[in-house]
Image 1 (spheres, rainbow, N blue to C red):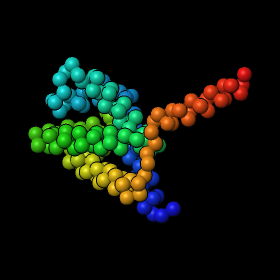
Image 2: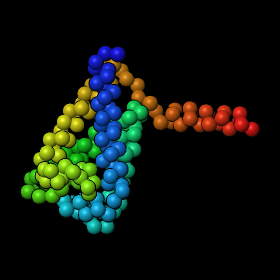
Image 3: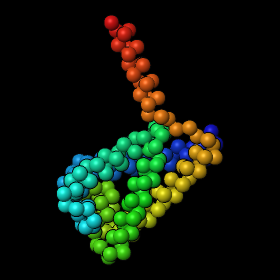
Image 4: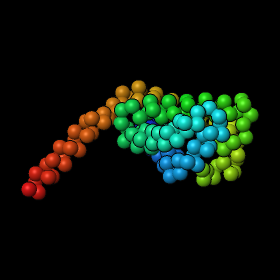
Length: 166
């Protein structure tokens, strides 16, 4: 397998794993993540908890989708990264001295750097990886898996297994 094919897989797995980890750590303490979101002052109080649950759940689902190369997952990750870049840019522009909230309340990066610029730079690097993934898919005509086809295969196997046991 050529080097670029391995790079495509590696970047997909790294981004997917990073989003799964990031989302999972936030889902473990959504109330603390809501406090981090509130520090930016852009989400109304009534929507803090729904956002603190839905956003990380979306990160986890998109990360899993990217690991398995499921159709639409890269689009969701791109949207999330663009959202994060916009929010970090807003925080820098406003001069906020807050934790980026990228990896939840126990973020070791926040303790080490305590600033938004390193998180913005990291997200820009991840966007570069996303551009590579899109380019590779276009160049190699990569067909992503449709979730409906995966579910059909799984259900067919499950039904065969059940029928064989009876």
